[in-house]
Length: 392
Image (cartoon, rainbow, N blue to C red; front, side, top):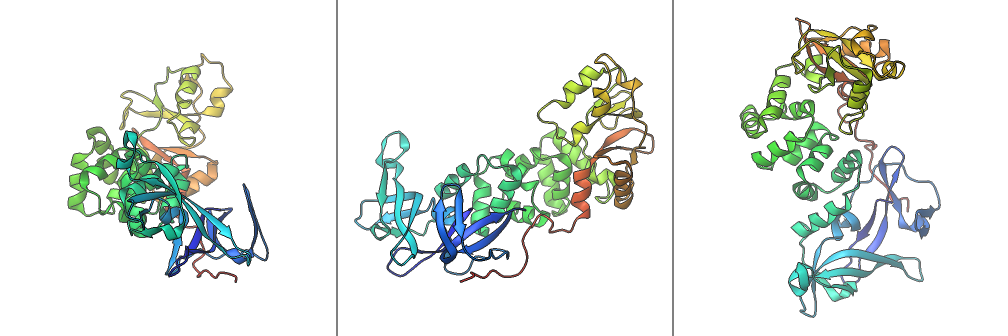
């Protein structure tokens, strides 16, 4: 269960309409509350067939987790305001579920250490102050996202209403926002950063992989792109400018400029130590590139690669230059997408080095980058496009 959908009523507490549940494939669908027979920790029992259509929020509906928690409410007795931190729902004798109680935190000025006391209140005790875009609200929601994997974080953000989405993005740290943006379609990336100032965008792009940052900047107006590049860290900006010079549908446009590159004298033990680093992705750790100096893109002449499985089959003191894998040729930076895909499929690889016309190593293309560009634009959206029905 990802959220609870409620509908406001004129006088009484909001009534529960249904649940948003996530099924395999991260698809979020709607389950009418009338079909729910039991709600227990870790388990929801329902009757009937689950409607597999995409959840679409309707007018008058409010999501408890995404919109109600974190909202500021005013007490009817004039005792001040409080922020909702949790919500209780309860069913009556007829089986109708409604909001029964609110767990709230009083205004910070009302307590010690800048944190107000907590109180319980019924819905009729408070009035909605209509502060759903309040910064505290976003802060509260961001805290709940702290343990999410970047893919799940991106999905959770995109599941929010547009205004709320921007608000949450503003509250995320540069690193977490960068992680989430890398997992979003480019149109959604642009929508989120469009209203941010250039300095914030530059800080976020500094934390993105250079190829992802370049793809995003390529969608922006040229004048703003230049302004943002000027504000970025010089080394990060240099990598991004380098990638922007290539056609995005070629190996040069797809590659990462930060492969693991070493000299021919590097030993197996040293190579394995390099791929053990936590900041190295599995695709990048699949192979090490061996070149002549210098060891920064563009390097000296590219000699070959050593896959990690081959390293595991040789003694630790073995020099990598003596066990090069020569089965697959490197890609030229001008190689088109279809040629890249055929090469990956032919040799069953997860990464391939990219060289220029002089044979110097420029970067590495990984299989996830190829898939990202070959799949439909909306491949990250696991939902069907048809409208939701409640199944009532």
